[in-house]
Amino acid sequence: MKITAARLIVCSPDRNFVTLRIDTDEGIYGLGDATLNGRELAVAAYLEEHVLPCLIGRDPFQTEDIWQYLYRGAYWRRGPVTMTSIAAVDVALWDIKGKALNTPLYNLLGGRSREGVLVYTHANGRDIPEALDSVRKYMDEGYLAVRAQAGVPGVASSYGVPKAGKPYEPAERGLPSESLWSTEKYLNFAPSLFEKLRVELGSDVHLLHDVHHRLTPIEAARLGKSLEPFHLFWMEDPCPAELQESFELIRRHTTTPIATGEVFNSLWDAHDLMRHHLIDYIRMTIVHGGGITHAKKTADFAALYQVRTGYHGATDLSPITMAAALHLGLAVHNFGIQEHMHHSPLTDGVFTHQYTFDAGYMHPGNAPGLGVEIDEALAAKYPYQRAYLPVARKLDGTLTDW
Ligand code: GCO
Ligand code: MG
Image (cartoon, rainbow, N blue to C red; front, top):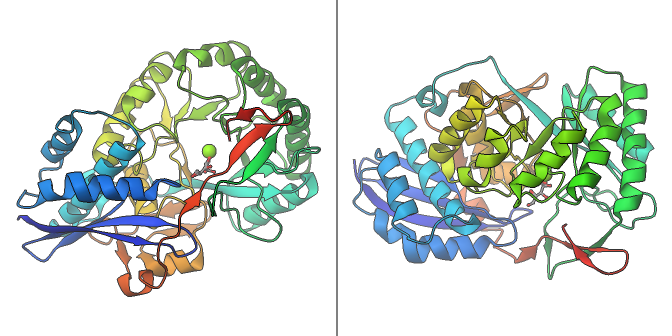
């Protein structure tokens, strides 16, 4: 089998997506997600100008050699644009492989290790009562695990809380919006949210929370300690993780489990965090972390240190990535949990898929390969529109981590 063509489909059904299609001489094609929220066309250019011409004529089964060729051959290594580009090729090739062998992808990744993939979704509210209603709504829908975010009193716009009446979508068209942040107000508020949730909802539901890189290590230690009575499933992205050793300080003060890595793009970003037992879940997902080939190696490395997977699964990762994550999540032994933020009906119409939700668990389906298709005619009705993630400033105007 040989690769005969490779092209991008850039569309924006409610939000931007970049999709790679790779065709072969046997009529089988594969799809890969190449979406990097707020920097979509950087990846598109990297792929079209520097990667896709090198694929023509290659054997699509050679996923390892092609991965090494694209990683080492570029000379300039790692980074979100490079690794998202490699991921798109890698996932499309795995899709081809599954279709050619007429088997769902999970069978090529170790086979089914569990009945279903535990997922969590996003609950939020402008205040605690709204957030409580939102968590309860998802519990009623069958979710066993729910992320809870709420507006912080005294702070105009908080991460994870949508503008009134709209589903939460962080990327906004036009130039970057600016939001405000107050660590003091947040640290004084957060425990009251989870105290209320536990009092009203009991101790069985898994509660997760995303700090979104906003604290210093000692502030994160204070937060983790204050949340211990409410036994969260995890505290996510407590502080920026470029300085991996800074997590030692958090770890010294709190037993609240820690998840991080959605902005990582290679194993080397998480290597020290895992081997020094500084995190409990690795969130680096398939689309930004070099594809299935690298995600499987990262999961296997994580297993040595009893770190489990907890992949990023927001709406800016296309259903292609959701499907790939579910295939991998069904197969790897050290699976932890999978984020599942609902795509819009329009997005689901463009990217038809086989994955399903039932009673808190998801399953990728048993179609050969990924089990995802793209309706290119429908996609063409929604052309790309530049969009940005917000930036954040502290109350005194200092730029901070959004
Ligand atoms: C999450 C993430 C998102 C990101 C978004 C950026 O936990 O799902 O933190 O909310 O902000 O994916 O594009
Ligand atoms: Mg997050």
